[in-house]
Image (cartoon, rainbow, N blue to C red; front, side, top):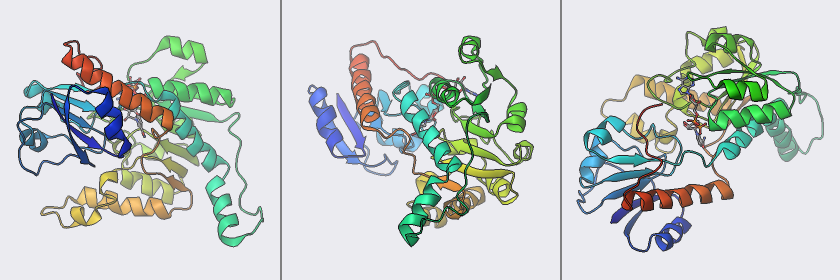
Length: 336
Ligand code: NAI
């Protein structure tokens, strides 16, 4: 089969090429786009989460039979469109529960112990003054985990290791997990009201769009911290900016933000024929977050470890082989 492979790093070409020798690859750097000469020879689209697969992209590759995303999340793929065209979508469901949870905990520790501030002070001034760098203990604090799937469950495990109290919210509760780790499922409102730290681990879809929004953000316990390593769209950027201004949220660790894809191409969004006001506002909010002294912003790197990348690529290779062999695995069928 002919595989259009949209890569992030050069070495991926050798890695996947040598493991799928019976197939022909067209390698492209970066994200797939709808514009371009249509190519009816491509049967496999292999992409990362930065590629939006919509009808324009599928029109450009009209013979595609499988979209293999090298990510857990699949909110960047228009499933209605792929279903309509009979295209199979596969993902990598479990490469990164340790990887992403460790990163979420790193963001939390960086906030709780002011690590970025402390480093910046020593680096930029050479000063060893401790003034203004007092942090807080995690022990005894309540963490509210939104989404208790692979990553959320591991975050709970880590939080328990820090002697934190845990409450959780999930649309699909897991009683055995709650019993194993001694936490309580509560409503989202209750979680927001009682958690000192809120950590998001739910997928992004129609139900979770702006799960944290202008209406419920004011119910968050005053002085709480927000960690988001899931997807930017779970949080209304405007609401978060207001809550930071009002001191409702004391600080945030954000690996994902709304419109993160446009942070390197802001002009593209600004000069769009019909720029959407909400998207422009989100872009503006991102600059507010970057400058905010108690917001730590990273560029969607929670997945990015040696071990996780290797697992992602190996699973993707197996996903393509399984599809070719007639027994596709890791098929994404619904929005959950
Ligand atoms: P998962 O599918 O194992 O768990 C998701 C959990 O969210 C499930 O327990 C599910 O029941 C729950 N959920 C679904 N809808 C919900 C709703 N409306 N409200 C509350 N909970 C809901 O997924 P996993 O592996 O834990 O990953 C979670 C998310 O993390 C992914 O969807 C992806 O977007 C994001 N992610 C981010 C990465 C990064 O580099 N920043 C890397 C990997 C994943």
